[in-house]
Length: 375
Ligand code: PMP
Image 1 (tube, helix red, strand yellow):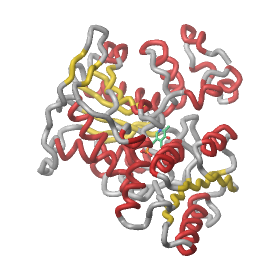
Image 2 (cartoon, protein in one colour):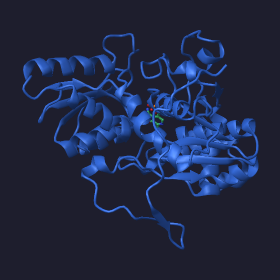
Image 3 (spheres, rainbow, N blue to C red):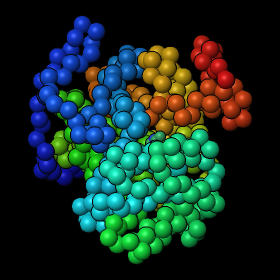
Image 4 (tube, rainbow, N blue to C red):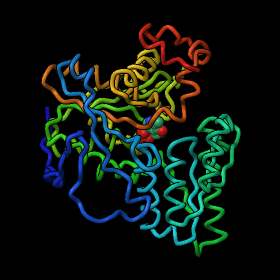
């Protein structure tokens, strides 16, 4: 039974724009954006032609790799920093502290640079030197610490929390904040206020289903929340989960939380608990899909070959899920997913013969796509 909902936002007509002879949108909007943060969001929604033809549905991917920091996490980074400013914890010249090994750190580094904040990042010391170098290059102070479980007080998240508390005590005039992306619902709000409305407007409200994976849960929970509200519950929303995450079985079992076991080649997604960003939103979901690494890696190659899209593995997992949901929804339906980031940071693995063999995934690449295994 569907509970009645009040639409929180009305459908707004898209801004006037023209499409030129090459299919490029020429915006009629005037003016410029104010700094890096003004360039976040308003990403294109891309039709995936081959999968659309195969399923008879319209399969669309939100090009989050086009955010200025290169991933969907720019949106959350901006919102958690704005939240800290608005709460008064972060003042001019203050410090942001976060525990992250990936895209959130990069998004935060850009946002903090452009707004004049210091950034301190804690991460497990299992992360590549490349990631550490990039964060330092973007001005962050980086502390790689032993990779221990979330329950352990020495886990990188708790070290980040304590560092912020220390700084806040030492220098309350500038302030310091632990942005806490997993349990800070400003992260989810970024997607309720930006990603969700963009998808609704870009599809003109003609959307039957949405699916994506979760790391913090911000994207899935926020977009689901908005689409459910604005469509009065009509848009079906599904979690896409990699191996090693507990959320798929949590949803399938109606709320039983198993121990985390196994892993996945996908980075930035998969979760061992129900984060505050996901809490209260899980019950809104219409189901979940478990996507094997074999399917995700094949889709990395397929998107490159069929659509010219150079995507990271979490995006590819989302596309597999969108295809499966499209098959479920049937011809004529419209299914949207998230293209979280590009393959740039993962190329040395995703397109390496040796890495594929180590992961037992070499046979997942069909013959006609082997030409992309170039490393
Ligand atoms: N894909 C990638 C590559 C990511 O870095 C992340 C964030 N960890 C996600 C997907 C998941 O996004 P969210 O944190 O909003 O669940």
